Length: 149
Ligand code: RB5
Image 1 (cartoon, rainbow, N blue to C red):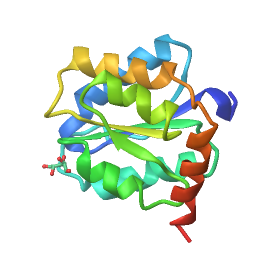
Image 2 (cartoon, rainbow, N blue to C red):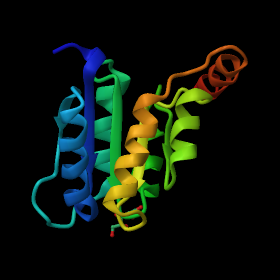
Image 3 (cartoon, rainbow, N blue to C red):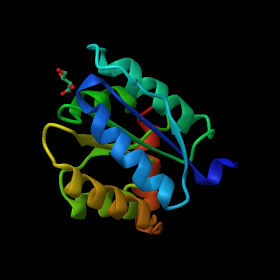
Image 4 (tube, rainbow, N blue to C red):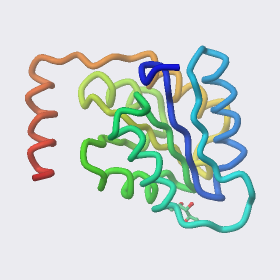
């Protein structure tokens, strides 16, 4: 298993079934899934799960990450505090494709209380099948990195 096909998945308690469905979906596509939980339904704070997944991406251990909470918003905010992470919340496929093509997003966040499983899997597919276009977008992504200090 190399970092090039490793993808980390994480969530809080609000998104366990959807996270597990996504894990099975991407594993069937050949991704090496690093599912860091949680697996039990007790309430658990989304920042720690967002941070844990983000650190695996930022370190290069995993190429991409998919994180989920009820809205996708809180866990995205936490992940984006980790240097090198560019994570967007998506509730439709256009944005999921564009955050890869234009923003070189390395993490995707989904709200399990916002989208159903069918749409969520389409969002994941749009994200994973798109590639960064570089060029003028690279300059802009570098500007985001410069904000990290
Ligand atoms: C948990 O109830 C909920 O606040 C969380 O899953 C998420 O929606 C936060 O952004």
